[in-house]
Length: 147
Image (cartoon, rainbow, N blue to C red; front, side):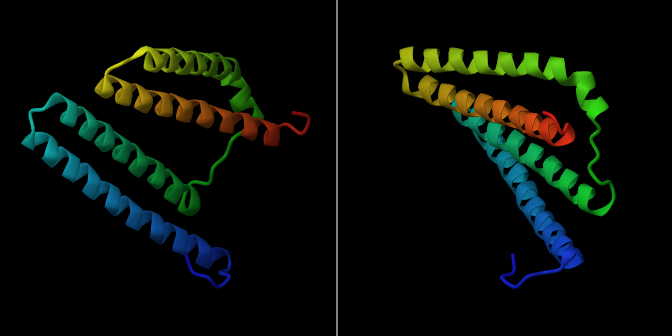
């Protein structure tokens, strides 16, 4: 982004422009991964390419959510909306933490390079889920003045 201070509307326009450019890069990544997947029959290579393709698809969707939140549909979250699902979110977060521990134990016991590398990927992804759910905890703290 620019080094000089931009005002609100300029900053939003620049952010949206940058997000749209980023989306174009994600679309290219999705296409490239799909093309590469068609060129190989190797299951390991295909699995890795599919992971990247799926992540790029999700990134594109999140970028669009960000664009929409800045241009047409502001983000809105009420305490009641969060309260409706909070118990289930906390329960799921416990599941995420359990899966992280399981994956770490499997990785520690694993002596095969490929399997160990894919277990590391799963650990990172599950930790990401735990982190994102933790962000909801931060939202909750900001919605409720008394935590």
